Image (cartoon, rainbow, N blue to C red; front, side, top):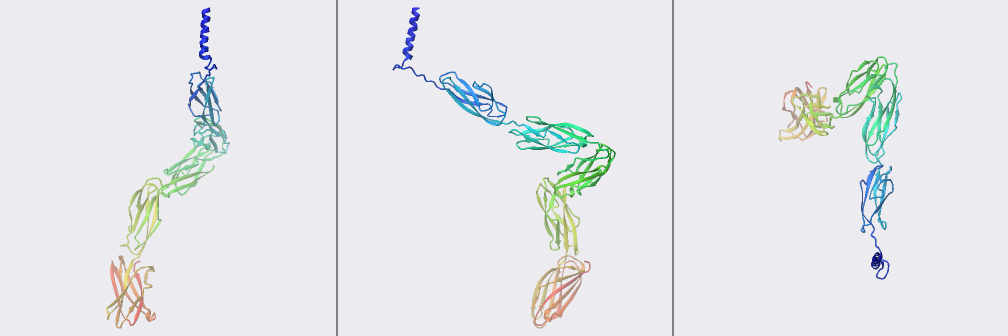
Length: 533
């Protein structure tokens, strides 16, 4: 016993010597290092409202002291691990930016660090209204679709009754409201009251729209046309509508009116038993349509009322830069442009009837919205005087574009007035070029403003004219030349004739021996008669 007491006293003494006092005899100072947080990691820094995220804190202690954790959040709820390095947190139901603070302590010192998680709203499909009652008369209604979340929402129609049509029936909604048109098709059901539902499907929820409708039983024939709209677009030539007798008895119907660009409606009339229907084909005439958009109405009449169908179509095809061309015997060429006005590649070809008309190139291919030049010529030789007309058609598989071609063929006379003095052998001449113009089978060629001034000496002088027929002549012509001499106060004149000028190209001259004295001047006029104009 004494030995144990002596040993304990010795140990206590040693501890007192080593730790009980400083060199100065003061108590010792204990220095503790606070914990160090090396990082906070979260599984998702952006979460949907109501979803969870796990937060992990990593910390060390230089003194190897045991560490204790506590998590706090500005919003939401910790589901587990609030006092551990790893915590599971559930986001609130509202949009927010949540701050997290983790505090780590060794029961002497503590260290805190924060981090943030963004909370966004889940996509959620909301429809309004949730009930539609069409009664006996209404056929269409609008329903709004909203996305209450912060990311785009995919939606579609999952279920609906056959007598209901929804437009559109699927889509993506971001932040804007989408409007759905709901149409009830009474022609697909008999008389009675109907209650059914439209089930929507989205990424998150499936709201339901309740619809109600009534259809009365008519005591007489009742005309009903469906669908109410037909769109032929760019390609369709034929579409169908249905005629139904919604009443009792026999419905007698017929087409009362249709647009001019509708080629055929078959059948155009008929009879239908109660609650039966017939199909009617509507065929449009695309070849008659210029490029553009067209709308019209087809009106149906019957002993059970009237109804209409709205039809629409878009026409691609070609357009021409001109709708009419004019040629003369001197203007024998013109250019036109053919343009493809639509999104389809088109093959074109040219057609006309007369032999005096020619086109180059004769055909071609036009890519979408491309243009091409076409040269149009007239052949003036070997054709009599006269007015010629034709129509040049540029045809494609979609439409026909036309240009009227007018050719006014007038033979041209070119010539020289001349005067010659024998004694001086002097020649003075002036050229003229004039076209014949019709007037009761006589063609007057005047030369206004062309005056000749001659220095005349004594002796015999010769006046004359030389001319060329520059185009082929098939008719007999009589030329009458009348020369007025103003120096004789308008009283003197000289005239002469050519007769029966017949044949092809030629040059003729006519000379008159006229004694002149002094300075003279004159002007001339041709009067030409053609036997067969």
